[in-house]
Image (cartoon, rainbow, N blue to C red; front, side):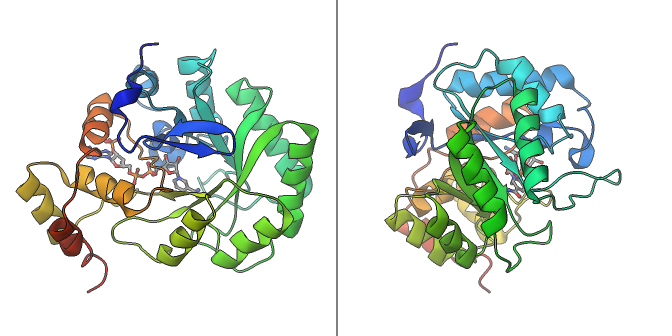
Length: 291
Ligand SMILES: NC(=O)c1ccc[n+]([C@@H]2O[C@H](COP(=O)([O-])OP(=O)(O)OC[C@H]3O[C@@H](n4cnc5c(N)ncnc54)[C@H](OP(=O)(O)O)[C@@H]3O)[C@@H](O)[C@H]2O)c1
C-alpha cells in the first residue's frame, strides 16, 4: 500500500521496539451501535481501515470485545496480510454481556482466553501490544492488578505478547504494574475537557512511556465548548482538529487513537491534527474544563 510517512502529524513514537505513527486510529466504533454487532455500512468500515493505512497510520487500537469479534474481524479482512509497519494494539480485561454491558473478566483463565480470541480473530501469531483494562466503564478503581498483570507477563514470556500496557488505570496501578514488568503504554480517558491525568502524563513522559488518551474527541458525547469553537473558527478549522493538535502538542509521549466510521472525517482529522497552536490559543484552551 502507498504510504506518506513524511506527512505524519506529530511524527512517530517508539513503543518498546515498535515504531508507530503518533496519529493512530481507534477502531472501536466500527462495530454496530454501542459497539455491539456488525456496522450498518460494512464496506465503509473496511474502507476507513484501508484509508488509515494508506495515509501512513501504523497504530490501530482495538479489542476482541468490540462487537464482540466484529471489529477485529473487520481489521483482519481489511488489512491482512498486515504490512510489516502496521501494529495492532489490543486490550483484555472485559467481556460483553447480552445487554451490551462490559463486565470485568480478569481472572487468569479469562485473560488467557481473551488473548487467544484476539490472536484468532485478528489472524496473528503474536500480539504486538496488549493493554490490561482495569476498573469498569465508570472509570478506574483502586484495586491490585498483580494477579491479572502477572498472567499477561507469563503470556509475554511464552512469546504470544510482545509488549504490555495498562488501561483505565490509576497512577498507583501504573506504578504497581511497573514494579512487576516494563510497560510501554497507558491508555486512559483524557481530552481537553478531562485532564485528571495531567501529572501522570508528565511522569510517563519522563520515563519514556506512551500515554494514549481514549475518547480524545469526547467519545460518545463529542467535545463541545465555546473556547474550543472560538479557537477553531479563528484558525479556520474544525473543533476536532484543534482538540487533536492540542493533544499532540500537550506532550511528546501522547499517541492519538481518534475513532471515526467515515473516511472523510479520518482525512479531516489527520490533516487537521498537524495544526500548530500558538501560546494564546493554548492559554484559551486551558480554560476548558477548569471553570
Ligand atoms: N481502554 C478503554 O477502556 C477504551 C474505552 C473507550 C475507547 N477506547 C479506544 O479509544 C478509541 C477512541 O475512542 P472513540 O472512538 O470512542 O471516541 P473519540 O475518538 O473521542 O470520538 C469518536 C467520535 O467522534 C466522531 N468524529 C470523529 N471525527 C469527527 C469529525 N471530524 N467530525 C465530526 N465527528 C467526528 C465519530 O463519529 P463518526 O464516526 O461520524 O466520524 C465518533 O462518534 C476507540 O476507538 C477505542 O479504540 C478505549
